[in-house]
Length: 275
Image (tube, rainbow, N blue to C red; front, side, top):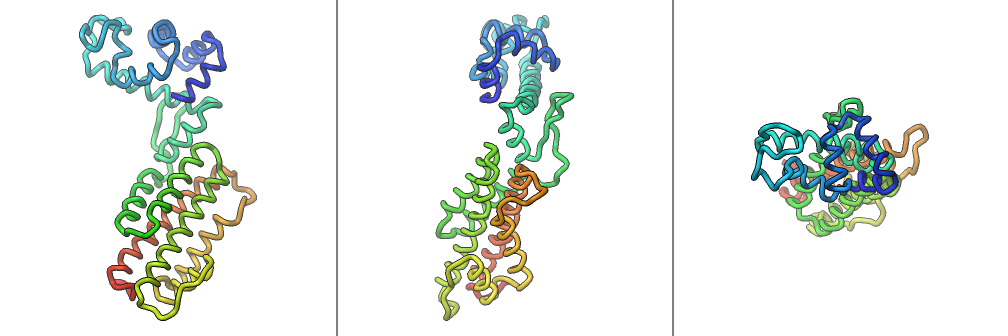
């Protein structure tokens, strides 16, 4: 909605219509959108969703009075047509200069745009960031870590900044998410009283602390240190910042889940081992 609204605000009505004609959107959609809605996307998008857009008189009260020109348009056909148009508009908006946030949002849901067909398709990647985020959030809530709100805020900010195209701040939030999890796991382990020595300050020292108490094996400690180091290193030559931010978000989601799965088992065994 925002991407299309921004496009309309910077282009003449004829240019907007030309854009839609050029991408094969139906004449009746363009004519009705311009004459009855003035290309007001805050009205068009919801009315496509509920199919009101397709009827000239009310909401399904006169199935024959539709803008498509059919003798009879059923509710089911209207809903299906509205969904198809919404898919085309979403795909089209993702190709606009104003639509980078749309494209990135789709990427986070494991989807990509086919610009030739104006369709949305599953991406080739097997990782669906949205599903992985949901798993991480569920684990955070299950583990009841003391700084749950801060951890979830880092996650939400990393995703939102990525969608906004703020790649390096997004990477920073992904790094802070991992650090917050390590800090809370270390603090909870220390608070259990199972170990006579306290946990130290600093990420590297806390990684070592978790190895010393048995939470990490040496290879795990090395892996987590490497992941945190990658997220802390700034730009990586040869990797576009967009890909770096996306990969950083995936790293934080997957490594975060590993931490939380281990912690749940660790806490269930009185912070002294795993079952």
